[in-house]
Structures are given as structure tokens and as C-alpha cells.
Amino acid sequence: MTREDTRAEHTDILVVGSGFGGAVTAYRFAEAGRRVVVLERGKAYPPGSFARSPSDIAANFWDPMQGRHGLFDIWSFADFEAVVSSGLGGGSLIYANVLLRKDEKWFIRDAPAGGGYESWPITRADLEPHYAAVETMLSAQRFPAGQPGYQASRRTELLTLAGRRLGYTAEQPPLAVTFASGGTPPVPGAPIPDPSYGNIHGRPRITCVLCGECDLGCNYGSKNTLDHTYLSAAAHHGADLRVHHEVRSITPRDGGGYTVGYVLHTPGDTGALAAIPEQIITCDRLVLAAGTLGTTYLLLRNRAALPGISRMLGRRFSGNGDLLGFVRGVPGASLGSAHAPVITTAVRVPDQVDDIVNGDGAIPAIPASTERGCYIEDAGYPGFAEWLIEAAQLTGMAARVVSAGYQMIRSRIVDNPAPQIDMIISRLLGSGAASAGSMPLLGMGRDVPTGRMSVHDDYLQITDYPAGSRPYFDRLERIMNDLATEMGGDFQQNPLSLLSRVITVHPLGGAGMGADITSGVIDQWGEVFGHRGLYVADGAAMPGPVGANPSLTIAAFADRLAEHVLASDPVRDAHNASEAAP
Image (cartoon, rainbow, N blue to C red):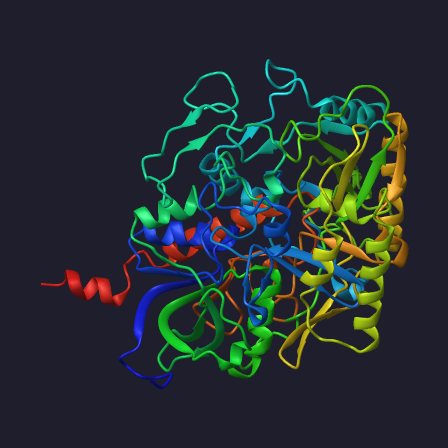
């Protein structure tokens, strides 16, 4: 079958990926009556199917060449690592549930010509109604700290008080977790009734049981992940959700629309993707939502087929300022880190731009050396952060850290292009137990988006990050140290930061929005400049760091994108219109 074969399957809207951008757009378009197909490379994870045993977790990585089609996809780049996920529901399967809106003043507009690094063509006001819509769909609730049954999480109170004593704001942020259902008071383990649109998994769900396993995947269905919400609603409205489908090629069609080539993964199969026969599907509109790394990789890989695409493609990569640290030796009773969701508290540290007022809404260029705002949040376990604790300098881990360090250094020397480092991470996995007085701290904020993304030998590469953000990370570590001291404990760096390396779980940028083709790859509505009907709806669309946890902002952006497309083209696609004709 050739790429222009008229017998190829066709759909109105093809969505690549099922994370926050893909799930939201799939639902909005399906609800409006469009024919929607969602292609997801990973598999579905109904409640009860997430790995828990050490052996299952150690094998739960994404590396199809080795026959692994697991949940965690670990990438190693020149100066940092990235952790993303693969599965129906995307990053929502392993994220820590936080739904914070991007700070109003952090929608920076500083032109590169003036020494700036990011310029947002949208404002907080543009996203407000879409933030509200997503919060409603994900049933945002706050952790009921101190209420009966929820007193064990001592870390919630300690971090809140420490932040406020230092002069910062601190709150229990909205979470996409069900603590209370049906208007009743919060109680762990209560049944969650299915919504009107049902649930694609067909399995019962219960309210949060406070196990701290959010980042490993919730086996109780307590997290309001995208498979339980947007994707179930999309399927209810007719969207076709397909797992094990990985997109490889994009080609514009004569007369409009796109031909998309994909491979179908068979669990357990090994070998290069190039050896798998490529199948095709055509569409009127193509929404790329394969995550920051996946979407930018697809655009770079298919750049020759997309003439005139912006030179900004691959630019302005950001890790959203992610930094992991640890608090140890907090006196008193247990911090209760295993008796609450992974994140319960957010401490906000102000940014210099918070005090800038500009009549036209624009913010002058901010030099990279000035103080940039951040958030610092607590972390429960046994989530992914706990694996990193076990991989650090806690008792009994030295030999594994040395071995893993040697393997990482060796990969740099031989210039191994393979981005997955699952075998190295597997060697670092420990028992998952942490001392009662220890807890991770998760930092994120306004780093400098200097990263450059490219494809070499069919592998994604990212350079020049976190270059330029050292002052930001230094400040973040100082504040983490201050918080640890206020809590009565000691601060401990992530060992990788001693090697000037960071780990991000929030990669952003690469196909960012801009005012025009000289400043961005897509416009403010997510459409690629010069390529009608091609959209970017995920973290790749962000022109810089969100600052707060980015999932809500990505979802709101995707909701706005879909609403704009539907408003500008209210009539159904030609296929549906012709069916209705007499």
C-alpha cells in the first residue's frame, strides 16, 4: 500500500499520544461529532495492573528493541536525564496529581533580540476558562490534612509551617485524586461511582487509600487519570483508542490532510523499529501529543516532508527547573510519607517578575542571572523519588551507585546514542524503604529554556541544557536547605547534581508557540505555521517553563486549541456532511 493509496483508512481527526494534550483534544473533538482515532504506543493499565514487585518494577521500562513495553521511559542526554511514561493516559499514569495554574506574571514576553529566552503569546486570562474546565473534568480535590483518617502525614504540616516561617506561601494544592465521593466526607477506600460516560476499563475504583504509590501507577483507581476521565469520555462519544501503535512518519497529502505511518508493537517482540512493517492512516487534521520528547522527535525526523517549518523547531527546551533533593534526620514521629499521596504541599517562592507591572501585559527581558521563582513540594514514597533515594548515599547503596556511575560515564566515552538507560536504573533499584525522618523534596520553576533538540542517526539528542540555569538551581538548593533546617533536619543533594546533572520529569518545549514563524513553531492556537491542519497539543508547545507542575497548563492549552478549531469550523467534516445530505 503506497502512502497515497485511496484505500487507506481515513479519519477526521488523528491524535498521536494519549497524555494531557491528546486525551483532552480527543474528547473535545469526539464530543463534537468528529471521527477521532487515538494512536498510543503503550498499553492500557486498568486498576490492579501496575507493577509492584521489585522484579516487575525493574523490568517495567520502555525499550522495544529489547522486548520491553513497560511504563517508564528513561532518557539520558548530554547533561541531564528525563523520565516520561508510555501507556494509555500518558504522563497522568505516573504524575503526582498536582493541578496548579501557571502564575499570571510568569507568562513572560521577552523577545530574543532583547536578551530574553521565552515569549508567551497567550496570557493567564486566555487560559482561565480552560483551567476551570479541566479542573472540573479531573475532579480536583485538596488533601484533607488533619481530618479523621488523614493525620498520619506529618510531613504535610511540617513543610507548610517551614515554608511560612521563611516568608513563603504554602498550600495543599488541588490534586486529581478522589478523597471524597458523592458529596460524603473524605474516607479512604470508599467506592467511586462511574460517571455518566462510564469507564473504559470496566473495573471498580475506590477513594485514595493513602499508600503513596501515585508515581508507580494507582492500582486502586483513586487517581483521576486521563484513562478514567477524558479518554473514557472520548470513547463514550465514539473515539477509537488504539494501543501499541507508534507513529513514525508524517506526510502532507495533496489537497489537504496528512498521511501518517505507524508501527504496531507486539508485546515481547524484539528488534529495531525499522524492521517492523509500517502501516498508514490518513486524516483531515493531525494532532501531535506524543509528549515533548516524542512530538519534537517526530517533527524533526519528518522535517524534510514539512517544508518551510519554523527554524525554531527543536529550540527552547526546558526541564521546567526540576530538581530533586532530600531531607534527612527530622526528629520526632514518622513523617508519614507512606500514608498520603506523593505530593500534599506546595511552597511557592516568588520571582522577581512578580513585582513588575507593565500596562501592555509584556514583561521586559529578564537576565538569566536574576532570581527566578520556583515551587518546592513534598514527596511521599514508594514513588519514583524513593527509587532515587535508594540510589543515593543511603546505607548499602554505594556499590550500586559506583557501578551505575561507571556505566553512565562509559556511555559518554563511547558516545552511545541510545537514550534509554533502563538497565542502569534497574541496577539502582533498592528495597523502597526509607527512614522515618527522611523525605524527598521536589523543586521546579522558571529555569532558562536554552536546550536544543536534534535527531542524529534516528536518535533524539538534547544539548545546551541546563546551561544558563546554574544560578536558578543554586538558589533552589539554598531554599531547600533552609526548609530542611526549619523542619529540624539536614538537606542532602541528589548525587547526580554533584556531577552538574539534573533529572526532569517535566520536559517542555521544542515546538513552542510564538507570535509568528520567526518566534515559534506553532501559533497561539497550536497550529503549525505553514501547515494547515497540523497541531501540537502537548508539552512541546510550551515556549518556556510553566514553573508550577505543567500538566494543568498543557491540558488547558489543549482544551483551548480544540475549542478554537471547532469554533472556526463548526460544520462537520465533508464526510459527515455528505452522509447527512439528501
